[in-house]
Amino acid sequence: MSYFTIENSYVALTISNTGAEICSLKNQIEEMEYIWQGDPASWEEHAPLLFPAVGDWKENRYVYKEKMYEMPLHGFARTQKFTVRQEGQSLCCTLYDNEETWQFYPFHFCLEIRYSLDRNVVHVEQYIQNRGEETMPYSIGEHMGFRVPLFASERYEDYWIELEKMEQAGRYPLLDGSTIGDPIPCLENEAQIRLDRNMFASGAWNFEGLRSERVCLKNSRNSHRILLDFPGFTHFSLWSMPGAPFLCMEPCNGIAASKEEGYHLFEKKGIRLLHPNQKEAVVFAVSIESEKINRKLEESFETSLIEKRQSVRKFSKQVVTRETIYRVLRHAQTSPSAANRREWEFLVVQDPKAQKKIAEMSPYAGPAREAAFLIILCANTEKIQKDPQGNLWWIQDMGACAQTILLAAKEERLDGVWLGFYPDENRVRALKEYLHCETACIPFAVLAIGYASESYVKKERYDPHIIHFWEREK
Image 1 (cartoon, rainbow, N blue to C red):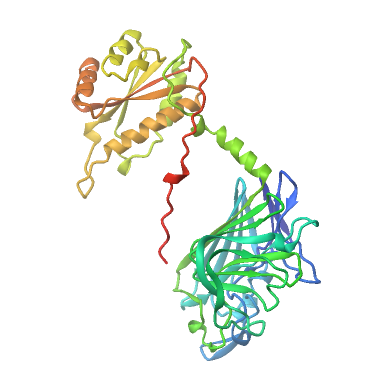
Image 2 (tube, rainbow, N blue to C red; image 1 turned 90 degrees about the horizontal axis):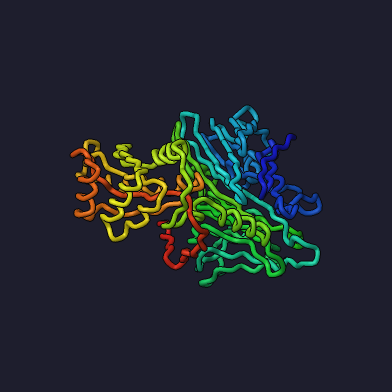
């Protein structure tokens, strides 16, 4: 067994080549381990990958082409050796069908699991490909065990699961430790599941078709949180051994066999079908939070380029070199444009007399006088074309480019302000005539840029009330 680790200043993730299993997820700032480290007295695994079965199938058997096959609990992937390739801050784990897997599963497949980090977030991508000539049935899921409680002074009952949405859902119980029964009442317009040491005495709590695609493991004793985002998964389960200090949170596409099911593989509840050469992907993310991690995230946010940018109208007399201006405009040309038309033309003005004239063309263009230089953003009409539906998109392209210029200026430790000219016909005409623009050029905006003459207090503009998440169609 070999181990592979990727890390950043927030988290460190360690996986094993056996089963591509997550073995450790640590908070780097506080040296806190979140993954259950295993104990033969209760459960010795950490976070096994479930493929191509989730839970027990009918007596752990199925029939395919008149032949009976055995299928281990949760499939066989968790015991297989994956090929692991590290690429910077990501790990790619690959498993192909082989002589051992054919004993359980007579299909040709490629299973690829990719792990990557983004600050305090672990991204997990699962790719399943049918390499054979027959339709391939499968299920897939994760069985991640987290330490609960985190500290010896805490109780299991101090923790709860917070669901993203209010849920009206029953849970599917295990009747005999392996077979799923009919749903029983559980969530009655609720968004919380309180943890109790005895709640799993009869097995996992299994849910199907929840509206929530995000859950959070919270507690009342410390600031540590574990968030799980699992869009596109059909099932979600919670499980632990009674009295054991861990909790498994399990997003799955599939579920254990019900009492009504037979051995027909293609009719199994929750099974997914892949046609020959077809490839599917499911993804989820695990985020960790704590007071110290959130403080570090906030500090990073506050010092980000975008947060630093604001409209500055007063400038110092410092010279901005031509090399700096070229760098700003090089950044500007990374802007998006419809159909890659790139209708931009840039005119740089550094003449104080010209800047004074331009400032007089609009009641709002006063900052043009003091700026170290102006960038006149123009649209080349010879590059403007309608799309197949007859729409013009050049105005959006110009707007995106103007914003990129302001961000590029901030990247170069400059500041600036967007002075609007288009679509005011009088302003556009006056600027066009003064600059002797060609017929094919439309002045769109004037960007006044330079070194700020004074420090500015940041204005908080964030308003969460204008952010709305559209509910995904089920």
